[in-house]
Image (cartoon, rainbow, N blue to C red; front, side, top):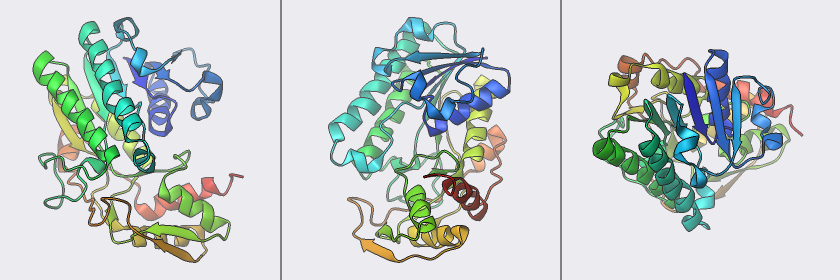
Length: 308
């Protein structure tokens, strides 16, 4: 398979790139990060089956897409906090950028289109556990931009037959994770005997370790097209933790306790719940997460210890 991955130098995208290369697929990465600065890909950047296109998805052309069997769309403004001071830029990157990618795919044609979405599209859910039929109920600008991505992708599926598959996950943690994620910040501070900041505390998350998440993406890319085209899947662990519980688990993984500073909930965050029904991903994709939260945090903490 020849797979084009937008945002392939990021945490999730890079994990998928390396997994695909290890399974003898060919990969093209499209990213605004210069190849010399694509740190997450430093071990494979010279791989003979890797082609790196240093460009924005806003400039993606049908010619860039032609010849590929699959496209996995990761390129995005991925930080919730950034969406509050910069909602316009968040929408530009996530919604307009996705439209450009879909247009290039529509003109070039492709066997499958994988969209990496987010559990944030549900916000304060109407019921639990959250299955694939739950209405999109975004609660902040970032979440709204991800929900818009999904709506666009499925509109192109219905209008043009682009074989879209949407995968939604909770917070993804593990070695190499993005450093603006609260789990990284907490582990980094705890290991250095610094206080941590908890905004709210009773809202919940359904965390997933990176190897389980990457495996879900692989399963979706390699599944028979008729099983996944036009479908969405929840691919986290299906286990709910409050932020207070995750903070305690971080301290246990780090083997230290530090003071906690309390701050108000982020806008729209109070009442947020994440507990996903992953039965569809299990039955259709064969998805089976293997790493529970304590082990995931221990693995992540071991990596954080090595950082300056």
